[in-house]
Length: 242
Image (cartoon, rainbow, N blue to C red; front, side, top):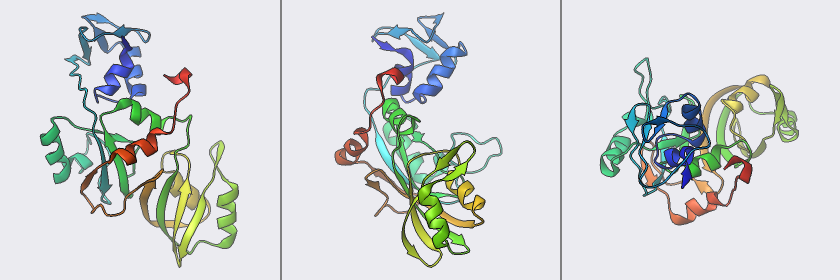
């Protein structure tokens, strides 16, 4: 027996947090009855989410997409703009495995680079939960060139909203540099750089933890190796979140 939100997430329907929201909104049925957050289900139980019977899938998939600039990270866009699921590589993968993988975290439309995709809800939750800080490195190009004073400010933390964002700067060449951060707030690097007086012309995620983008062509997919997956699974969530 497992909790419903875990089953829904592991089926690749959505993240565990989103599944909890759906349960709270009375959109999940267990054997024909409205379920609650504490409910658990076994293999023979029938779960329906938003009016459709949940298809459970035991096989887990883990891929990296080199997201191109100008493509949205969303499953549907009301304005009809192009999303990652419109890419030929993503359509081919969906046809091959029979399901649409969920993205882990986001990149805004004008950002590019490493995006992890999976149907493993627990893995997704592990990498996005605010209780951890999985490091992420980005290649950034700004105008003007980043000053020594602001390199130090980033190291010591720049206040955005109610808390600081810390960034470690490396490999500076003229107006391009790499920055490593340990959080995933929405558009956080753009917001920090703008607060320091810089315009960001390029923002490319090149690594998450020890997993690197190197060698993956723009718009294409790479199936993650066992070593890459395990390098990210070393992070853990405390029992209170499970």
